[in-house]
Image (cartoon, rainbow, N blue to C red; front, side, top):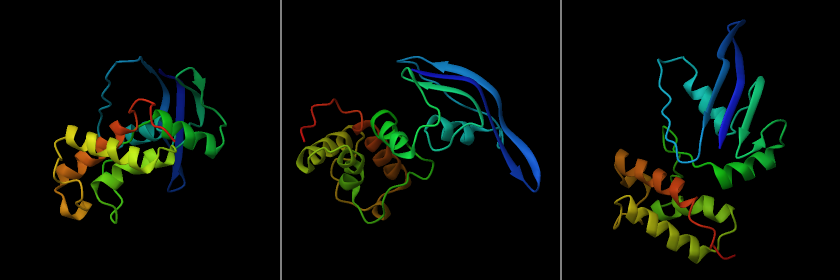
Length: 166
């Protein structure tokens, strides 16, 4: 499902090259759960940005579901992100003017899911994460933990099986 081969990524900071990732190799098979841990500055966020197709490696090979991710155009990467990758950002990245249901609906709408169908899916996943009754609340009206659960519902709803109807 995910395979990284000799992934390298460097940055220039203060005129010096800093190696954030140096020949990283690992794979994650379907159904596996993986944690990435390490001290601050060890390259965790850089690695996650590469895995999430938000950044590209300087060297190495990234294979996602059998597809080699290399030199793909932004629109192709966006489509892959939308169909295959669910994000739960550290700061949740909820849209402040949208309520919980609408925040969960956003990636579904980008996939072409009809409004009513995406709304039904959003309600279903918000209930699964324990937010029934909070669906119409804006992010500022939710606790940090509740905001995190909206982000989790958004990531999970993206994987709702393909009977979306257009």
